[in-house]
Length: 328
Image 1 (tube, rainbow, N blue to C red):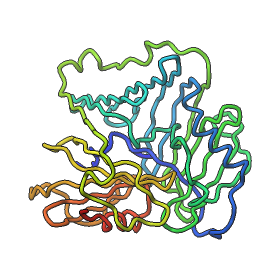
Image 2: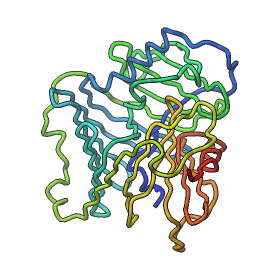
Image 3: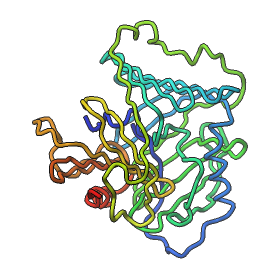
Image 4: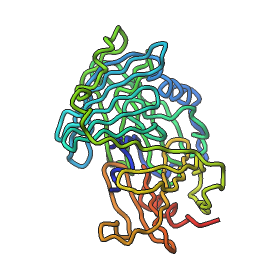
């Protein structure tokens, strides 16, 4: 639920989670709760909605406005940060364009692993029960909606948990929290929300489209690669994490494409970037860094290459993944 140089790896990084660690690893998930999760994952692709939501983490608060339209062309969406430096993201299905007026920059890229509230769950949901105990919680009122709570407890300490508040009628998320051993790491919650109804397509146009014609343009191109084609591997990932894609992509501030391997446990995602060491003074020092909310970053040097692992997982997990990167 979050939004690098390392921040430029992701335009917006958004995550969720909740609940205590180390439940009984053999406890079964609730079939009803698993069905609710499928509904939550599918909801943003089926409903129009307009709302204002608040992101909070470690005393920081950020308010955003979102307009989401579904029609015969697919999904169209506009989100705007209302606090601090302005930022606007226009999405047409999986193509995203981010307007940064203070930097007079427009960044375009394909949505791969990025999750934007309330569309936080991947689709399809695969192997969740292997790594999380999914439970149906109580009903609570959120933003004037009667919500159903769904809890996801991690089966080990390699991942965070999640607590989700959903509208039972549509499945749309009303609130989502990431928690680590009972501590709220970060949270999204709608403060006002309208689901359904007609939406004027003009509302989805960028307010910066006219002036942005003179701004700097950055196109973050990516190309998927066949398994093993990158020449790199994550040899010993934490239990439950599996490779989902290999690609080459260019990043802001990088003169040439970098190798990118993405892993997931069915819910949480970790990206690994491999690039030649630049030797520049501005290059990040090796070590573990905390970004914002649930995002942790680990960087190290391997021969003449720099390895960076970034993800919505505990520090030990992102370090294990980063230290497991080897050449083939």
